[in-house]
Length: 120
Image (cartoon, rainbow, N blue to C red; front, side, top):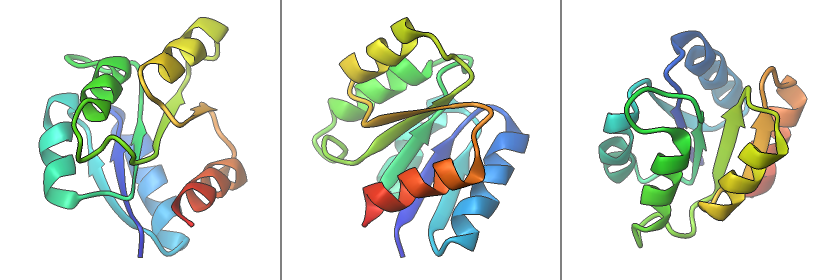
């Protein structure tokens, strides 16, 4: 059962994503505080991480870069899930090491499809 770490400061979004990944046979862990995300990642050892970009304290860009610089997470898929739909944000996400990018609001099929394809 793949472990998915979901990082977003919006509790409603993390709850929705948690239900979606659970329904599809994955084991979710949610974090609503970006400062706790790396600590949680170390304790959970996720198979995939989703990150929001716009969070207080550490942004999703900063968090993605920190995770990529940690050998333990260098090869773990990181999917940005953000309301930012501009080319600059998508390009920056790639530069800091994101594997893929989903724009909010997202379709359930699109979200689960990306998760499945990256954890298979």
